[in-house]
Length: 328
Image 1 (tube, helix red, strand yellow):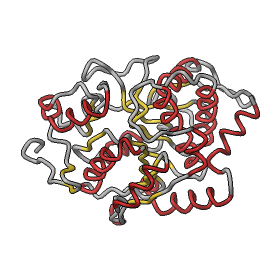
Image 2: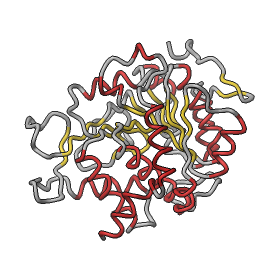
Image 3: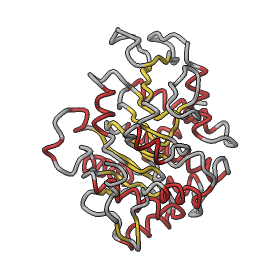
Image 4: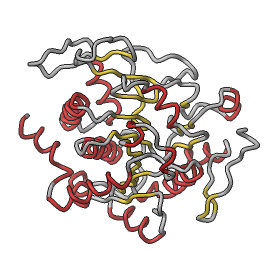
């Protein structure tokens, strides 16, 4: 176990060049917005919006970029394998609002393939675990991480709402819920979605995430989402003290002590941060902030769902205007 834990902790820093490159990328990508005048608080100033993808989802990345650019967001793009990295370089898809970082070592270690992968295929599981290791690598360099999958469309700017949920920094972990019933409340013990979430760069979060990744390594047949939430919920009611490595997970605001050593988890409103089952009428009625094309099988179904809702903005390698008539 100690050897495995040490491997996970150091994986993204396998050599000095990797570590220097990632540190430079984190410094450049901090701040969420391209316009520095919009960065008015310390949480925003120290947050990196991160996205990762393989070659099979390159077109989803470029559609995601259309939404990010429209909102003036800057971000760290982390291709998961050589094909995706080359495609970004060749297409000039990463511009002034984008910081590109690639770790050949990490890609090789996880044997990431360039092909699209369906949920819970072995190749999908490898990619999903890669995402957690990349997040932990960035957290260890001191930045808060806001992670987004590329099959997400930003209807409105999500960051002000994420910042509002943060309040005075009470949330260690903010996440999109995965409720099949649209608009329902998150219930303690259920699973959230690991495609849209925020991690605070605190020792508690980094230690917990490190143990979660260790748990994932021992269960290679399952996906990151299942394993992460299984681990979190199995430690849900374990009390913390200074000598143990266990957590108690609570919803926002239930703990009043700043020294309680509890992981504070904060679910997002499922009407605003919607899953793939939400149709356009639901998105309009609830003034939803994001649409996440999950609960769909294969990249074709995901793209069709985004297109049907007017959220596939990429046409002939160029970004088309956002349909403000459909989402006023």
